[in-house]
Image 1 (cartoon, rainbow, N blue to C red):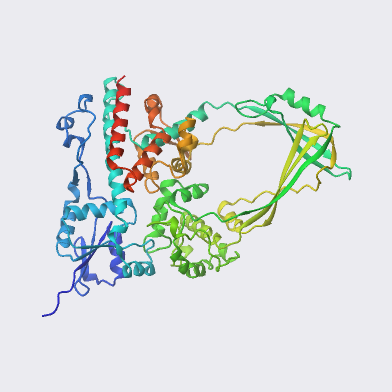
Image 2: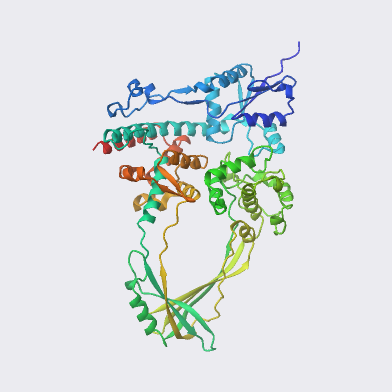
Length: 611
């Protein structure tokens, strides 16, 4: 009797992924069934979800009275165990998946390689009661070469289990904070007749992001231009050569808050008194400096980079998804918070650069493909890595203008890894009066090797400015033969764009007013994730917390009216709470402690509001 062939099944996040793999694996048109694929010849099923099939039960599940009306006496709701339920409109697709899994011997998780994709799969596996073999297929690009590599080399399901754990903990804590504080705030505002319909949305991330926009809106609204002054001195060497230096105004004349000279009278006095005075070159320092290429982009950094093309954060992600998905398969996985690359991807360099050389913007660049850039570092990556071009060539004529802008930005940053370091000479000259009481200085930069900056110029459209290096020796005496008072004005803060908000959410320390709290924040202490930040901005707009204003964002009148209630939900505190969530998901701290920490936070917020 012939041995039964094992039934293998691949589980995807969405229908388009299943269709891509059906083409890749050579499935026939007849293999497509309703809501799944099956190849009798290969004994392989392809099944897909449609995003999250399961979600957390609402607060009324735990406190039935809340289904009638929200009342403070029923809050807060802290479930001992969070119930996960199947969405009504997802029952048909889940039943199909469950039936197929009942026939499956080996299941391959093939959802997106991120926290949400992993959670989608793990929820399905749990509620379908699947007990067979389980493996993980990891692919960061959708071209056939990448899919074949992933299919030939499945990894243990333990490799990505931590991502589902983090996503599950995050959704429970977001529920705890968001549900309770939204119900509480909405109830209080309705009681005071401050809102009549709808809910006032409050959340761990959405409120912190809205506060960042509020700070920018108020800074712009309350801005008053301030005039400040500097003093330029024209100096003449014994050879007759002339040059300009800037006076170092003594600290006692500077405004303590801004560090600027605000008195035109003082500036004019210095300019007048220093005419004819001799200065000696006290320090002449020239340093050769090298700057390595910037790392490949993660999602947030790319959203900031393409902002100059008037491409918003949400639109950037949409464009990236089209470049990632088949049929283009032009870039690697977009929803990443990593910038380094695995060392194994060094094997793909020549293939990728070879097809990129067909692009006029890249063909002219001087690349060293024998170089091992610092970007390739296994210690700095896990499942995710930086966004780079895939092995598959792309025809720019098939792309829209905005797709081209995004693709070239990614491609130019990638090839920059194989270019020389940017080198320049930095000169600093300090002059002092012969009695040593007054000093002036000048800085100059001279480019020695443009290196990777040549690629960066194509991305940024900017050219580095160079100042002529001053030919002067230490001890050389010069005379002031002229002076000028230069007037400047402070500039109004720029309107907060979507990309700038994404950047602020990734590194929120500049928006933290408490210096002690700011000192606690470390690199990586952001709010939200690369994959969710643009969605958070979108939700904040829909919930009327922030609004679009021209090409940027402003806080709404509704949010401004109640902003004082959210002083304990700023970006700094939220980032520290998020740090605790990550530590718990990685097993570095006890999950229960993090849950209690968030419960205490919710209780305190509600107590403060009640007062």
